[in-house]
Image 1 (cartoon, rainbow, N blue to C red):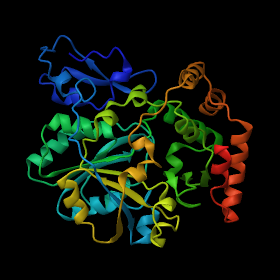
Image 2 (tube, rainbow, N blue to C red):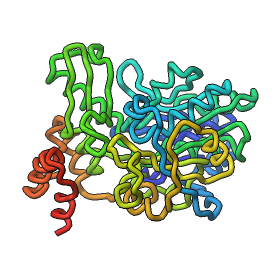
Image 3 (tube, rainbow, N blue to C red):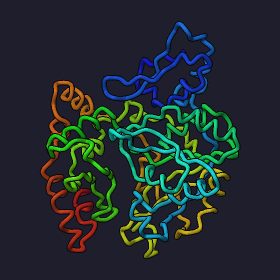
Image 4 (cartoon, rainbow, N blue to C red):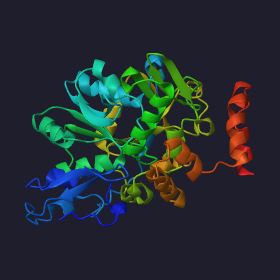
Length: 395
C-alpha cells in the first residue's frame, strides 16, 4: 500500500493510482500545492502493485547507453519563433498528428492552471507549445494514452522525466505505437504558488484572469537567451525578466521536494527522446543557423523508436553533437536541484500571508553583485558585448 511518509519519495506521477485494481488511490493536493497519492484502506486489497510500479519506490535502471546528441532548428522561422527553443517538439508532434495520431502534453486551462490534454489537429497543437513552469495535473491522460495505443493509434506523450517514467511503468513494456518524450527539467514548481502569483499580478494590473489572452514563460521578444515572461491581456502586454514567480522558480524556492533528490535522473531516462535547450551552443558549433539567438533544441535520442521519429523530421537544420559536451551547459538534465533552507523560509513566509513577491525577496536575498549583473547584462547585450557578466560572476 502506498503510504508517503517522506515527500521526497513521491514525484506525483500518479502511476500508483493508475495501476490500482480497486481504484483505492486518489491524488490529493497538499498545503504546498503538490499532488500526492492517498489510499482508501477500506478498498485497498494490499496487492502491492502500486509500490512495484512506482518509479521512485521501486526504480528501474535504464539500459546503459550513450544517447545520440543532435542540434535542431526549425527551418520555418515563424514556427521557431513560437517555440521555447528550436522547435523540435512541434516538428515531432506534427508528424504524429499527420499520421492520424494523438499528442498529449501540458496546456493551460480556462483559469490558467496547467493540465495534460490530448490534441488531434495541427490547429490545436499550439496549446501544447511553449514551456509551462507549473506542475501539470495529469488527470486521466495515462488511461487515455493506453486506450489510444490499444486502438492502434500512434501516440506521443510529452512530460517531465517523472511523468514519462510514471506512464512507462503504468503501461509496462515499450509499445510500438507510443513515443515517449521528456523535457529537460529544472524542477516542478508549485501550482499553489503559481495561482497566488497570477492573482497578485491581476490585482496589481486591475484586471480579471478572464482578461488574459496568453501567457508565455519563455517569450523570445528580446531573443532566445534573454527570454522574458509575458502576459498578454485586453489592456496590453506585460513583459519582464524580473517576474517574481520566475525568479523564485529559478532559485528553487518552491520546487516539489522530490526534485531535490530525483530518482529518475539517478537511474536514467525512461523516454525515447529528451528535448532541451542547446545552452552553450556558442562553444560547440560554428553553424550560423544555430548562432542567430532565435532558439536551438538539444535532442537526446535514447531508443530506436526515438531514432525513427527523428528520421521523420525533414524540415529542420539538424547537426550531430557530442552529448557529454552539451550536458556541461545544461546540468539540470542529469542532476537534481539543490536544496537550501530558503525553501522552508519561503513557505513559512507564504503561510504567514505574505505575497509571492515579498516571500521571494525575503527568502532569497540578492547580492549587490547580482543586482548589478541584472542591470548590466541587457545593456551589454545591446552593445554587442557578450559573456562579460558571466566571466565577472566567476571571479
